[in-house]
Length: 243
View 1 (cartoon, rainbow, N blue to C red):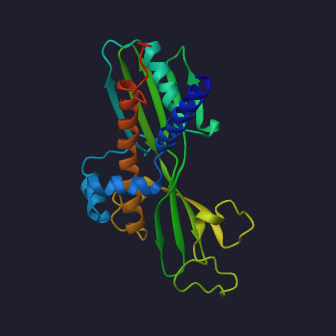
View 2: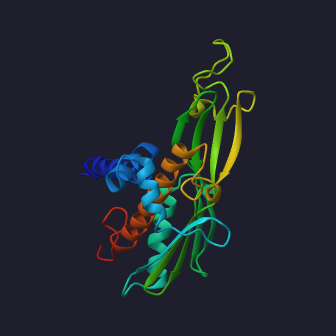
View 3: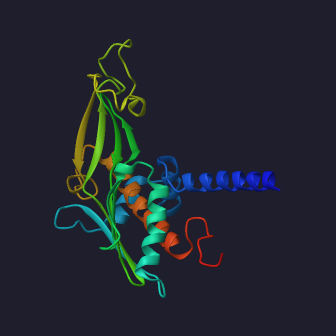
């Protein structure tokens, strides 16, 4: 009997772990999500989205939505969201504030390689680190999602006509070499969203930034959708008081 219970527990644990890991949206999954919503033409999609977007006073791209949760107490909502946050963001440093009394959780977590571009001399790999703030009150939660910059890893040996000889050429393999501070071919940049396409028409990184904007926008939708799911049904669908 005990053996059967242990086997069942192991199965449930594996299923739970698989589900929790699925909460983290990787760049490849985000791209599929973005294409389903906005199409595969990044320039057109970015331009269409820009008509409904406004930068905040800090020239950041900010989204805010209040999710109603009638009948749910502040404590219930905090527990549900704390569970979702800790299950989703594995890096403990990503949770920069978790204050139960204030009803506030703040997360800052990077999603890497949302856009890449290989040019004549350089290759660029774009990542974002949104700040996600959850404010919790009786019966409702406010989600605020903010991104000010694209974090760019540039590879001067990754372009089609890069002068670097083949023995030192990295071919823009920025994902593998991101933490390699000794590689002189790689350097970090920050591109302010407000100074790039579609907010600036004449942008030498137009195509890269078009995709980056669409992916950034899509990720905001995905985060808000996941928060709403966590509030209303939990992350496994079994979090209720009837047990």
